[in-house]
Length: 90
Image 1 (cartoon, rainbow, N blue to C red):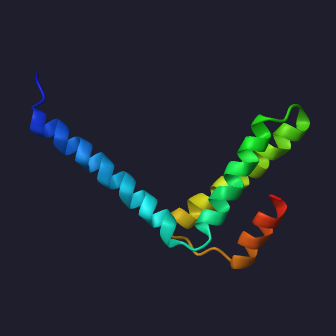
Image 2: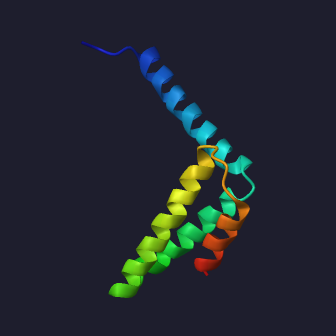
């Protein structure tokens, strides 16, 4: 069974458009970029830290990822919750 070249190109374009749509969705929420930046910073700190402080940072990273997932899914998130999570991430 062979897959035609046009089928492969079509699948590649479908994947690229889905990725672009997801990226555009994140960019449309005003706080998503702030939450994503905080998550990335906490993830980096967790990778460069050892022991129990690393575990605490991993939990913080997971909380930020959950918040980011909710924002990406279009859920209504209380702005106070966003501020609280961002302040805890500092």
